[in-house]
Image (cartoon, rainbow, N blue to C red; front, side):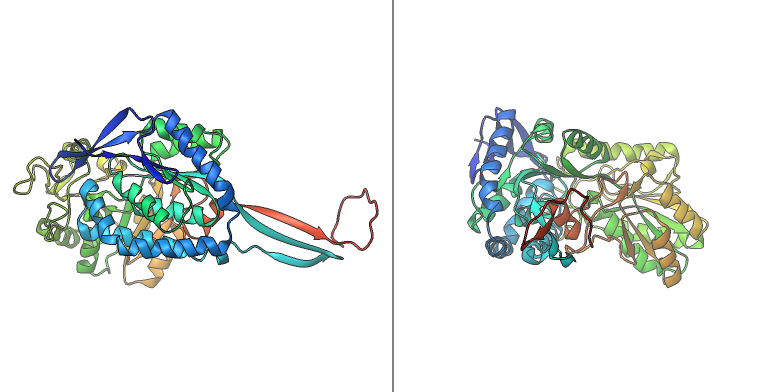
Length: 496
């Protein structure tokens, strides 16, 4: 019988009331590897009820207890990092080294959350008025949910639930149904670390489960990472139901290369950031902006490196890039390549029609490079989410800044230059949430916050870092007096 990936509710695997299932593919072969249970409304109710019940006691747990469990969880994740990477590769398709890097970046958020006693410290002001002290505390929201994408089945959930749980919340995770297995393993290891049953639950499912979580009266907050149309929906529906929502959307990340840049360094960066994980990254570089007379030399250098890349199964040690996640997604990305050709862009490297020996049925598209792309083309306007890199040529630095700022997305951007003043001017003028200076994928460390601007973020709070702690808690201000004598005063209280 085909293996069924189940939910994790109240500390145990369960199929619940699920009668629907979805296919989970091995992207390298195109074969169905297993099935995943798709939640019914009663499963959502069951998971949230378990979180509500467990969350009451968990919120009363000491900071020392939470920190101790998180340290143990960190130890177990480190011990099982190869297993987690293998689960990612088996269902997503990315090469093992990339999957291992994903696990490491998730681990860093757990390490940050281990410091929750310090992160939850409030403020205190003595003698704000005669005999009166004022102070603030941060308290958990209650039950919070995370809705996460297929491209990082370990890292993105771990941007959310370690901090949320460390802050005293209970958590319901709805991972992508395309690669669901790693999420259940994360939950099992957290239970092994000592987390009480019901504090962390995994609900497999599709849009039905998402909407049920957004509507559920006992879910106080929702974190989301995915495409911009779905992010907009999640934010609108969640906030309409009175929930706190952070919804991170899509991207069209530009890498600006100035004429003084080292061409080899810039080309290496463009290829690494454009084709890593088959371009299925919200922080992938999808547009290289070549400024002035560096364009011809830069395109030639990128093309040479692109044709030398090895595409193959994620388990092949020689492979640098794996397949796309599903056949449907591969066909969608391929249609953008067709559209780029039809629109008149110069197809410098064509990755269509590729398949490694013995894997003809896998979901393959080799690295693809366009030159002379213009802003009116769909390959520039849309988030392709595949191994398609576009080069746009502009005459000046100002034109590059204007191009980046005119784009509706504002997730990440990079500039390559040896001119410190130009780099400083760029970082001040561009309307983008994350900026790399000679760094192609400027993903912040766990102790900084991750998030974009414009159509890349709905809500005003980013994930992980200090803003993550802020999102999963709410402030309470207390003003206290211990009077020696009482008396009635109907006047408005002042501080004097």
